[in-house]
Image (cartoon, each protein chain N blue to C red):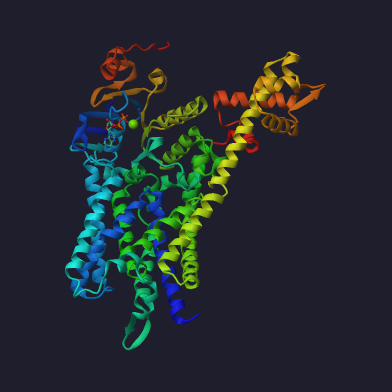
Length: 386
Length: 245
Ligand SMILES: Nc1ncnc2c1ncn2[C@@H]1O[C@H](COP(=O)(O)OP(=O)(O)O)[C@@H](O)[C@H]1O
Ligand SMILES: [Mg+2]
């Protein structure tokens, strides 16, 4: 692995971490789309900054572009506040306008600006090692690495300092306000960090990958944990993993690095979406099937409890009476037998003592919905969870 | 004996998008009462509480807590928002939510430590939720979620408690558990203000009541003003409550 290859992977990983942190909070605040808006609408800020500084990596340019990001957020909120349109519509109104202003500015000045729309949208990670930062004659590494590294350090510092404020205002803005942690201040702080990260990263990885790196790792992590700190950690790991594996995918396929990283992010999300232990599609389907069986079981037990006459409890009659298909009936019978809830006596089914007790308790629970006493039942049966 | 005024609201008008939902509210809540705020859906009950707590900015009027603006008196006030106002799928545990009640006394940046954790565990114990302390909040029943919110308010150790529909979606056992804790708070000299929906239980649970429907209809002791006349004025229809003697 050459030095340049290593540098590209380091830069991509730093960008991934810097995006995953604000991304986690944006996803939890259901504001993921705002990052899309920011990443596009900063274009005019970048162009103006470029006219002034003639340097895509200048801090002034980053500042100007980040301000454009904040203006986007303010405009979106202003339009939304009129109550005439919803938030997604407001986002859809604002960012194409700002983005096209940027595109027109580039087109009008195409001669003196070496900046094109493709580069802004897709970035070019492969070129990042060529733009070096030279301090008093010494080469200290690629410029992008220093820029995104500095942004990342500030982001981590802010995260550690304001973790509790971010958490409470994201979970419960009303409480946060009543405690004196202004949700507006925290909101704009988060938006500023998101804007600065987006601007700092776009030159290296492009606007599209920035959006993907903000949303996808956090959305993936959300499916896997019920702990905020762990969600942050997982999001960071997924981001870095996609960055590095995406780089090698691009290497093998000789394709765009940004494109490959985005593909890895998508694949990772899809796998987790399917296979996550609790919130994954397959787990949910399995749980629903279990619940259906358990409802059937309860229906069946209740039938036995309510009917003393033997004709109603004869095996041959049960199918007709409860009106299930054969397979269903067999699953339910097996389940009841396995749990010692029923017994057979010459093809007549009856409840055991345990079955009788369980049925009474379960019905009682369903009717009164008291939660305190039923805790141990929940562990045995999906039916009573949630 | 002159009773102290815990909360005073003067000429308060609040609007969303320039459409007023509370008109010219005057209200004095004496210290040590257990007060119900009643009124139909959309009457502005939640809005009133949010404006008192500085969460919403009124377009006119003022609020004071023990004669000072709310900003200066934050530490005296605890708040239980409506249960539906938060996302219960948020990745956090019961204990962690209760700990949030300690954030106000910590101020910016400082993190909760052992002392805060201990207080949170005690509050969980008080509402009977200690066994569930590590449970993810989406795995709790509606009643348990309300208890967690109550514990979070208790941990704030305030003088005035504002609770927005704490009985919403809870079973009878939880309702009794909650009202007993509220009555204990009153006994300890605290002022408790509760948005309440079940008119039948007002006389049994509360000693003070405010009728609200965009305007303030009436406020005072339950035994003096909780009558068909005020109910009709508030709810619009001809109201008859059968109060069990
Ligand atoms: N964020 C909001 N934006 C616009 N209107 C709102 C908002 N919140 C509440 N309202 C409106 O204000 C009125 C009072 O609401 P609220 O205080 O929640 O009533 P209550 O708590 O008594 O049911 C209602 O008509 C409601 O539709
Ligand atoms: Mg309300």
